[in-house]
Structures are given as structure tokens and as C-alpha cells.
Length: 146
Image 1 (cartoon, rainbow, N blue to C red):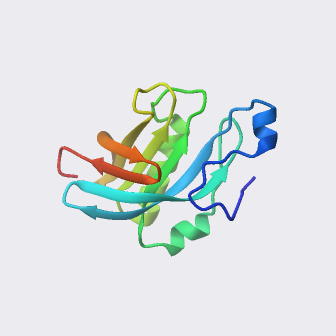
Image 2: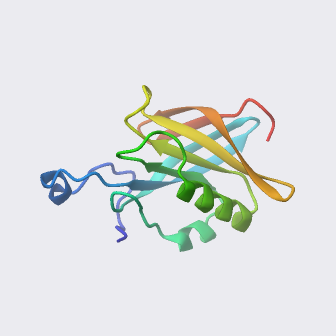
Image 3: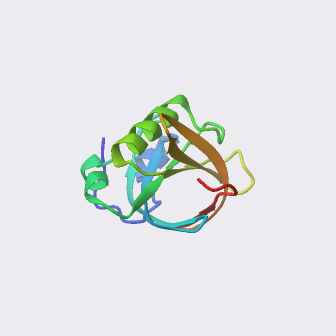
């Protein structure tokens, strides 16, 4: 199920709150890379089920400023799942550029963790990176040159 029309919103519909359901949420991250920093804003919020969330892939293909995604793991740890790895590898190949995968979770002190996925010759590598998430602003810094 895809929700459209949410722009930088983190409000969960009342029906979900009433049923005390944990749902996965997703945002596109639009921005730019400068030296070893990725600076972006979360945009186009969508709400899914407990284990997955859909998004508008046509917006992905139409945007040159997309630098990655942020999504929640409501009942999981901050580790990127097998689905996250598969999805990110596919998009890195499709878009032919490095992408951020930010995971919002309750199990870390700062409430999120970020990875950068990039192509290295024939494989896709990922690296956990330093990051700050303030409201809808995301800044990631990798320590090695990607």
C-alpha cells in the first residue's frame, strides 16, 4: 500500500495508533555529495506493513538528486536486513551511483544508523558510516574514500 501526498511527515494515521501496530516507514533522501559528506533531506513519506514498505519507483528514476533512502525497522535492530541489502544493491546497479541506506530504529542511542552502498568493480560493497539525523536533515560522513 502506498501513501502519496505526505511531504516530510512523520505522523502515523490514527487507525494504526489505535491498534498499536508497528509499521515500517520510508522516505526518499534528496541532496548531494561534497567531499566525504552526503547531505540530504527526507521527503515523500510512505507507510507500509510491519516488515515492508513500498515507494514510488518512478520518482526514483526521474530524480538526479536522490542520494538514498531512510526507512524504519520498528521491531528490529539497526542492522541492514537481507531485503535491505538486496534492494540497495539493485538500486546502486540501476542508478550507477553510491547510495545511502539510513535505518531508523529504537535500539540505538541516537535512533538511527546509516550505511553507504557502492559499486566496487563487479561487486556492491556497503560501509557503516557516521551520521546525524535532525528532523528531516540527514548528514553522513564516510571515513574512507568511496
